[in-house]
Image (cartoon, rainbow, N blue to C red; front, top):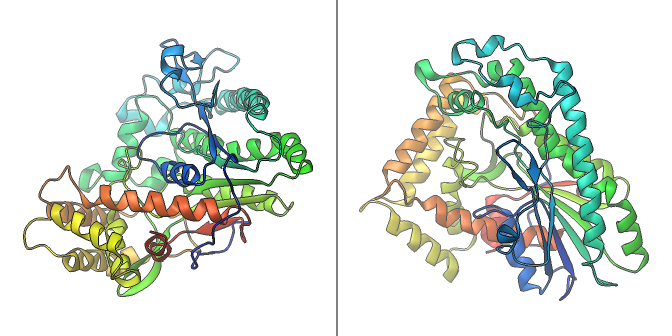
Length: 431
C-alpha cells in the first residue's frame, strides 16, 4: 500500500496562512531538528505556535508533565500534557515493562533472549490506551487556543522508539557502525526477539501516533471546518532522497534504516486519511546530521552533495555563495568541494552499494561490505575538515531545515499526494 515516489520539483507558492492562524506541534520541539524550520516559517507568517511535551520520567519510571520550573522555559501557548508514545516502559499485568524483561540480558546471550511476547502485547495495548487518553486531553485543551475562523496546521513530530534499556544501544551501535568482527547484520538483529520489540515500538511511536492524531482530532476538525477554517496535517518522513551523484539528480537512501518500516506505515496512514479528503501529507526530508541521527554513521554522506546542488540550481545566489564560503572555511587548505563530490560518486559507484539503491526494495538491511564502504566514506570526508567536531554538515543541515520548513508549510495547504519527497534540487531553490 506504500505510496509511489512523488518528488516536489516546483517551489510551492505562498499558502493562504495568515497572522493568527495556528501551528500545532504534536510532539516536543528539540534543538537542531527538522521541525525548527517549520516553526521559523510559521513565525514569519505571524502564526501562533502551540507547543507540546512528551513529558518526563521519574526515577521509578512514572511519566509526568513538566514541573513549573521546566514549563517556564517553554514559549507559550504550551499544553503541558505528556505525549510520550511507545510502550517500552509500560508495565504489563505482571508489573513488568518490556525494558524490565530485557534488563540483565548479557551481550553474549542477546540472540536467545527469552522475551514473553504476550506480555509485550499487553504493554503495547496499555501504552496505546495511555497515549490516546492523553491525546484526547491535549486536543480538548488545544481547542481553547484556536480563535474562531483561524486556520490550523497540525505537525506530527513523533519519531524514534528505541527501548530505553542497556542491551539495545550496544547492539544498534554494532548494526549501524560495526565493521570487521564488530559488524552485526541488521537483519539478524531485526529478526531477534529484542529486534521484534524494537520493531513494534518504532511502529507505535513513529507511525501509529499519526493515526491517533488524525482519528481523535476528527470532532475538532469537523467543528473548525464548519466554522470556515482550513485544517491540514503534516508529518516528517524519511524514505531516501534525490541528490546529485554521478553527475545526475538521483534517488538514494541510507541503509540500514531500521525505522524505515515504521516510516512506510506512516505514509500508509497518511494515504488512508488522504483518501477520505483530509489534507494530510508525509514529507520525506533529506538526510541531515542531528543529535538523534548521529548513531547512523554515514547517514550524512549524501548531505555533502547539497553543495553541488547549490552550484547547479542557484550558482549566483548570494545566500548560496555565503553557504559555500562558510563550508569552505571548515575544510583543510587546498581541499575542494569537487574532491568531496568525487568521494560521494565513488561510494555510489560501488557494485554492492548499488544493490542498496532500489526504491522498490526500500528499506533494505545492510551488508558488511556496503556498511564498511559507507563508514570509510564518512571518515574520509570528515578527515578533509580542519576540525572533526566542526563539519560542513552543521551549515548544510541548517539549510535543509529552513527549505523543508518552507516547502512543508506552503505545500501543506493542498498537498497533491499523501507522501512527498523533498530533494536537494528543491532545497536549493527554496533557499
